[in-house]
Image 1 (spheres, rainbow, N blue to C red):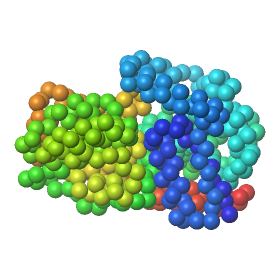
Image 2: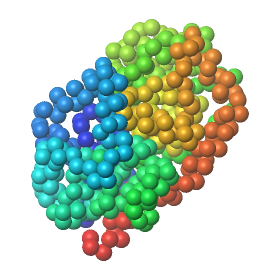
Image 3: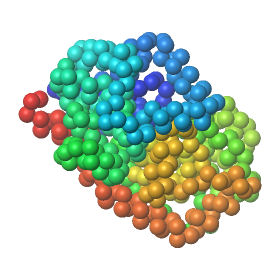
Image 4: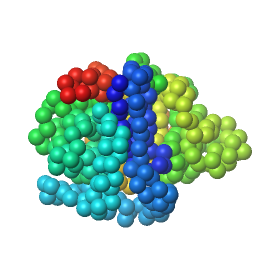
Length: 373
């Protein structure tokens, strides 16, 4: 029997937890006798203070997005010296994460956030732990906080990320282009959507927390709109109740959906999605081959995801939706144009570059192939 330790960060619903849970469930389907533990670093070290940190973090992003974006870029994106040191993180969490590893004694550690990866990389370089560690990147870029050199395996979301790691000297045998892992209940769509329909069905997502330009976008949908929209309200209960009471003929509001089977069914009904560029949501949509229109983004990670997917033509830039009174006036010309066929070709090209094995199966195989285990 093997033991696997998953390390996300913060308790708020995020792609870090979503990816960890997806891998955990998929892995237990393969090896139900295995033990899987998920430990969130801040709450396990700081207790109730984690809730305060999470609240301040969200309020900062919501009310001061430009300052967050600037500081995020300065801290982890811009090129700096080769060996960065985040001593304040080490002071707070290095001993704690070492104690967690010694207590659980995992055969494999999976990092879905950069901070645990950074700390474990330091511990492995100093020979303080020897447990195999996997970085599972939950965005479409690699920033400086991620531990790299001593990490045993890297699961990346896009081929260009593999190129970056190879340029840093990481052996090709340690890097796998898996895409950002999705839940096993999200099934791959093999049929392309039709390029023309008399009436389309769209999804509008505000993210799990339902924040951003979400409410303003919905106001640009008229009662006689030629598109029907499922509105994913996330944890924004006030928005869900308000939309329900309005009885808009084109809008179908939905509360937070925890079931990936339900989300899979929604994806199958939809012809496209309007969303913010969170890594986990983007990965599910690419897996389902669903046209992605980016209408807003949070500062930091989502800004970077947007730039990358736009660069590789895997998402449409829909940031100028405020220029029209009805968003369908900008959506329909794209949905009914050759751009959609080109988009699907790019998505097919992306899929051809992914590992043929699911990420959980790769974890299972690597752990069982390791003679030291």
